Amino acid sequence: MKIVTVIGNRPQFVKAAAVSRLLREAHDEVIVHTGQHHDDELSAIFFEELQVPRPEHQLHIAGGTNTEQTARMLAAIGPLLADEEPDVVLVYGDTNSTVAGGLAAAQAQIPVVHVEAGMRSFDRRMPEELNRVLTDHLSDLLLVPSETALRNLEREAVAGEVVLVGDVMVDVSMMFQPRAKAETRPLRDAGVEPGAFVLCTAHRAGNVDDPDRLRRLVDIILAVDEPLVLPLHPRTGARLDAAGWLDELAEAEHVRLAPPLGYMAFTALLTNARRVLTDSGGVQKEAYFAGVPCVTLRDTTEWVETIETGWNVLVDLDREAALTALQTAPPAERPQLYGDGHAGERVVAAIDALRRA
Ligand code: UDP
Image (cartoon, rainbow, N blue to C red; front, top):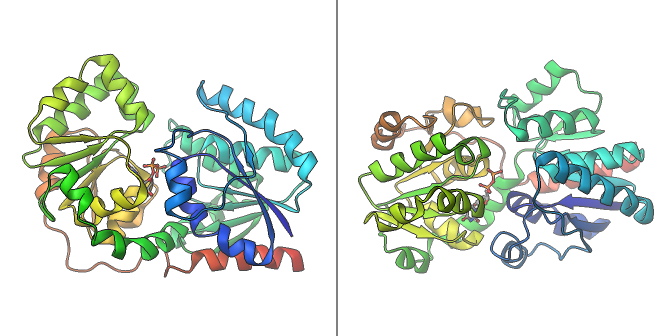
């Protein structure tokens, strides 16, 4: 079968690492990189480190509002699909690239496969939530990471076929975390000791675009009472700079500012951190998998099982709640969530089954 895979941002490159190479063993895959994340540190390094095959098409579409960006992607992907004539279009997660790839394919009556389907934060203010819901309802094959996702889709009565495959990010964590944990260089570069620092990431529009919320985020970071490594997403860096707060963070003795890191350096820090403080979706799961308690700077999450098991706490941007959660001991039990590290194989098997259907 010929499969066009549409990806465009950092977490999607990580997810494709679990699938693309396997897919190419039996199928003809064409990767379209929309350009949503285009800097080397958010894009090229992931293709190299995680051995994701080089994209066949680069669309260079970045910037603008979500609506404009999605519209430009749709306009570019439509003709590309007419040229490539794939049997299937494969999309991941919840970004503008996901919904644009899915909608362009559905309009062309090409079956859509959505990996990481069924996730819901039930917060329609998040652009990601709109992208998830829309993509799920135009997909033919919905590959879900968890039982919760399965139930969400049952409730919404989606039209496509739903298959529980597990989480492809867990596959990548299983492949790379043990090796990354042994790497000492990223910790030395950040000036931190194993088990004696907090790893912090923040980039959600809801936390960094509004200056009042951004200030609350800065105040939480400044109040943390131990070394804190902060690899800055470009969006967050730009907002902090515009507000004049970047220097304040740079001057705080316990804050170690860093550029966005490659997957191996980031995973070395994640697996050795005492706690993770984040608003990222992917990082919440990776922390759980690494056995590092997570404090999430949001009031909802789509990864509800990490909360139910007690390994993740939602604190939004409440400073006292964040500081308390950073000191709370994790539970003794950490059940396996989101699969066994073979989700990528199940994704390929489900796509194979489409051919036979
Ligand atoms: N990540 C990384 N370097 C960083 C920050 C994150 O490699 O400096 C990885 C992280 O391990 C995870 C993915 O990027 O696999 C998460 O991406 P992000 O937080 O941008 O997106 P989200 O998961 O929130 O959609």
